[in-house]
Each structure stands twice: as structure tokens, then as C-alpha cells.
Image (cartoon, rainbow, N blue to C red):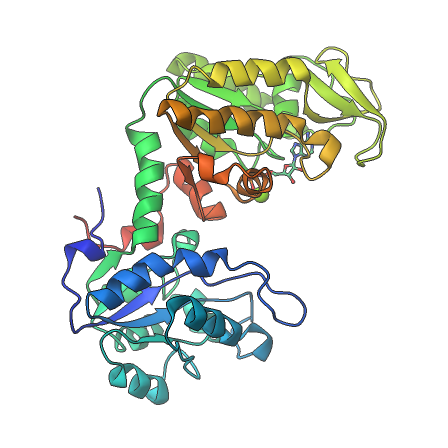
Length: 397
Ligand code: ADP
Ligand code: MG
């Protein structure tokens, strides 16, 4: 069920409390090293200000463990926000309490206030109803634009929605539209490319996707467990021996569901997991006993690229190899390029997952994808078919 957005309500003259994700990376001096997340909040903030709302922003930053800690203050974020919004965005001394209430109530239409780190209070992550109520008391309307935190049932992502009209922001709306568009109503053929380190972390994703996709292409460390399930030796490669039977069951389930599973034909094997280790390509039946599978091989790269070029919708989660090491990034690069090329034909490409998104950004291909998710854990849970608490709490359209 689609959720109401800020376009569906009247915000003029209202105080709007917006949960955003301002959890930016910082260096040891507190300087912001990447402001992507701050920039991602600007469309919603801009729309609300233009429409005459007073905007109260709230976010967490890092893991301050439930007590105030200046190292996790949102002060540097307030500075960057002010520059980007083009208007001072003052930082409140806290996120609840009489002083904050006074600041919130004095806020004029078009002005913006940032609350201090929500996680300075243990009640935030505990989803404490009184704390949620105190947040709600600051405003007339609640907006959730923090897709990256929507898989958590915290006071600011879920609890607060019990006390205010609750709608999604524009970033949240874009995330939900892209992910549910691909999963619920894909143009076919629809392929999912699933990789990454472990089967265990992707089992629920695989099971959910195999009932929806026409093709399931598997790579990365998790492919090893599938290869083992088919009787191949994988040397010293990452292997989840306790999941070999489960991998076999997944292959059966896929067959029954009519999804074609494509596994690697060949691999890159390395003597050690190190960028300077000797390495070469090897067929899946030729993995040396003491070596490690570190990437998909050249035949598999070509096969996956060819297969993907015929698809109209592709969902990608999980790198094809240990892409952090340049010699083992070719599989991930080939798949990323094949998926990026789809947009030219009007096909849909959606990338989710922290490392997959990092790889796509590193390769400079992010802007060629239909959608690159800003939420690692949240996008994964969405691909598992789970209802995200931060989404469930919003009003249906
Ligand atoms: P995402 O964050 O996109 O969901 P994952 O966290 O599941 O992806 O997996 C990413 C990790 O998988 C990367 O750190 C990468 O090095 C690792 N990986 C990929 N292929 C292999 C492999 N063959 N052996 C060991 N690790 C691998
Ligand atoms: Mg990851």
C-alpha cells in the first residue's frame, strides 16, 4: 500500500518534525568527510520551507550509547546544513525538554531548526512512548525521510507516528517507489544479481526473490557454498559448510518457482587473500585445494553481462568478488557496467546494499543506474519482503 507523502498534506503555517539521516562519516577531528546524506535531505527540506512550514530536523549520529557525548554532536552537520540550505540552521541544545520546546515554538514559517543527536537518550532506541510523545509535542506533523533507518523501530522512526499525522518525505518516497516497483511490478525479464560475502546474510533475500524473478545470478563469496552444494571443491575459499544443504534447497525452490539460477562457470583463484598474491582464472572444477576463490572468472563475467543485457529489470545486491582489492574487482566491474548499460534502453536498474553501492560509486556508475539506495540494511530488509517499521508507521495513501 503506497504511503502518504508531503505532497498529500497541507503544511502551510505548520511545524513539521522531520526524521532525516544525517549520520555522516567524520574524520578524527570531527570534519565531515562525505556529505551525501546531508544533500539527500535537501529536496524535502526545500519543499517544506517553500510551502510555508517551519522545519524541525532530527537525526542520530554514530553510537553515543544513550548519553550526551560531544564527539557525537550534530554541530558540524548544522554548519554544513546552513551552508547548503542557504539560511542559518541553528542546533538545539538537546532533542527534548523545555528549552527545545521554546525554540521549536518560536520557529517561523520557512525557518529550520536541527535537534541534537537523538541517541543521547537511551529512550530513542528503546522506542520509549513518553520520549516519542515529547518529540511529537514539538510539532504538528511528522515526516519520515530517513529510509536508511526505517528498518529500526525507534522513537523517532516509528514511535512518534502514534501522536502526529505521519507521512513520508521525498527521499523515502523515491526509495519505496524504486524498490517496490522492481519487486512488485517488474517489467520482464526480471533478474536479480546476488553476491557478497555470505549466504547466511542473504538467505532471506534469495528466498524472497526467487519467487519473483525470472533469473537469479549468484556471485561473490556466497557462490562458493552453492558450488559446494553442486559437488565442486572450493579449496580454502570462504564457505559456510553448515549451509550447503540449505543452498541445495534454495536451488530446488528456485526450480519449482520457475526462476533460473545462474552460477559461476569459472573463478579467479588467489594463493592468499591479498592484492599482491599470485592469482589466475580457474574453472569451477579446477580450484586448487590450498587457494581462495576471490572473484568470478572471465567466462562468467561475459555470461553474466550477456544475460543481463536481455533483461528489462535488474536488482543488484552484493559484489561479485573481493572488490576492495583492485585485482579482484573485475567481476564486480563487469556486472556494474552491464547493469549501467541497461538505462540506455529504458530498462530499470536498482542497486541496494552498503558495499554494492560503494562499488558502484567507486566505479563512477551511480548516476547511470535508475536507483541507488541510500539505505544498506533497510534496502536489504526490504528485499527480504519484510515490512519496515518506519514505513509501516506512516499513513496509507
Ligand atoms: P552488501 O553490503 O552490498 O550487501 P555484503 O556485505 O553482503 O554486500 O558483501 C560484501 C563483501 O563481500 C565485500 O567486503 C567483499 O570483499 C566480500 N566478498 C565478495 N566476494 C568474496 C569472496 N569470493 N570471498 C570472500 N569475500 C568476498
Ligand atoms: Mg555489506
